[in-house]
Image (cartoon, rainbow, N blue to C red; front, side, top):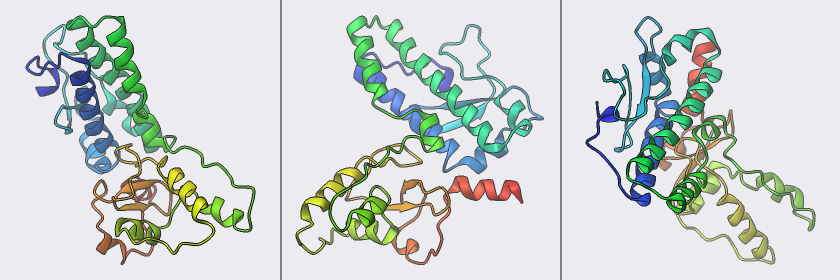
Length: 254
């Protein structure tokens, strides 16, 4: 198994961090955009299953490695057994927390194996800590609060729009259509900075003005169009967009 073999061994801080980000991206994909497939694969009738994230940003639900001790630290064992004993959202959050712990274990396993000193370990953790955890991405806690504006006649509308642009506004930014210039240009620049704090609910990466984004009308999380497989053309025909997680939760309740 790729997740448990010793064939891929990053040796520098940058390589370990790249490995961490790739495995993290695979697990986030399993718990967000691919959540229906992930849910089905975690059959409680099967043996102990683990969720693996791989360096190629893919994921897999599989049995743990047979060798003892394993070549790499193993993810949480038996995640499938808890699937039907709790709410789906709570179960996904539980898997996310254990996945965060596993990713740190793998990263610092590589650090120990290749003799990182305390400065290298500190630098590695600092780089990792700049990213939101998988739990924060899954629960939406990764989205930073937007500061309120208290001055000017447009304060109420600005604060309401801050960090939560509607789809039409995002499409305008994607097409790089400049807004009309007026005396509120400075406020617009501040809004742009605030949008930069918004994180994708699927991959956890920051907002970029040259990328198409779409907001879920149910949970109000923002997503890269490419992460949820929505194009600008398709978005024009969607009256109410529901992200994969909200769609899955609705099916589970029905």
